[in-house]
Every structure is written in C-alpha cells, then in structure tokens.
Image (cartoon, rainbow, N blue to C red):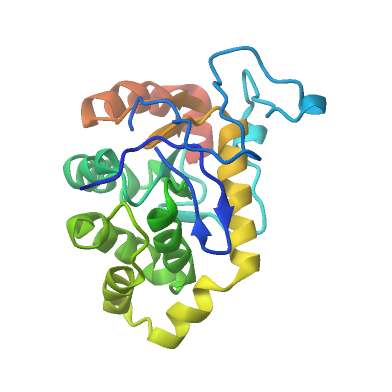
Length: 245
C-alpha cells in the first residue's frame, strides 16, 4: 500500500522520517520532540518551541538554500522558476510525474522558459531512506533515479522499513551495495536533508506535492492547465521578458 502524502515526522540516523498529499495537511505522526502544527493556524512562538511559519515569504526567502545544492532542470536564467516539494512514497507526486511533468518539461523547461527545482520533503522512514539514496546518486543521475522511484513505487513502498527493495531501485543507476550502505550512515547528508524539510515547513509546505511558482505557494497537484494559467502571464510580463534577455 502506498504511503499518504502528508506528514510531520523527523529525520533520524535510520532515515528521513517525514510524510505528505496534494492538499492534505501534515498528519500527527510526530514524536514527542516534534509537536504537530498547522500553518493555517496562529504562528507558534519560537520561544516556546513552536515553528515559525513565514506568512508571505519573499523570493529571497523561497530561494534560500542550505548545504545541499539545488537539483535543477532548465536554464539558470529562465524567466520563471517552479519549485516542487516531493516525497518519494507519495502517489500524488507519482501522478504529477507521469501525467504532467513530461509536458511541463517539453513545453517550458526544455525551451528555456522555466527553471525547475526539486526539493525533498520525505514522509515516513521508508521514504526517508529512499530520499537519502536519491541524494547519494551522482547529480546527473538524480532525476533519472527519481523517475525510477516514482514509476516503481509499488515495488518498494511499505509501511515498515525495507531497505532491500530501495536498493533494488537505486542499483539501476549504478549504485553499489557498499555505496548504498555507506549512504544511509551519512549523518551529514541526513542533517542537510532535515534542513531542507524544516525550511520547507517554515515556508508553509504542508504536504506533497506542494509548489512555488515564481515565489507563489500552491498547495495542490498541478495540472498543465494550472501551469499554463500561472506561467503564461509571467512570460508575457515586461519583467519576465527582460530576465529572459
């Protein structure tokens, strides 16, 4: 059974423990040190241990990065940027990958109109372990391996942690067992992925897939109709035209 697409887990040395659906809020699957919260409610007081959620994040807020490099497709100077937050166990992410992404890539990314950024928001320990493996793949294999995890969800997603089927997917891009085992013990990688997810929560991400389209947060699974409706006005705007030049 595929995991849901909402979550409030935390990363650990056992994996990136996280969860997330197109419009489903994060669930209360947290540990005692990770209190569930709602970005739609009042903003928690950081002094009391709650998370700060930026109400109206700026482009600078959205584009801030941690120690991990952004995984991107398309021109760095493309006039429009789309950021997707994904969980590898999320069926809604799989639907977007299969039904919308190919046309998005063909129409906007490959033509230099959109820069696409993928960010990790893993939900559940199985997703967490797969996410660590995904980040350990060579950068030029990242999107290939992501696609394999999406297409083969039924073969490796489970409620319990099962490393063998995750490796069975990872080895399809040349990862060895030794590399896979070492990857899952890479605490620096785990800590960096924690930062990506926690930063996403700070920006208001509540599930997967959630998107930022030129800095505007969209909490649903985008269709090509949605994308055209948002992207085309940006491409025709004077500012977008100047950036494209």
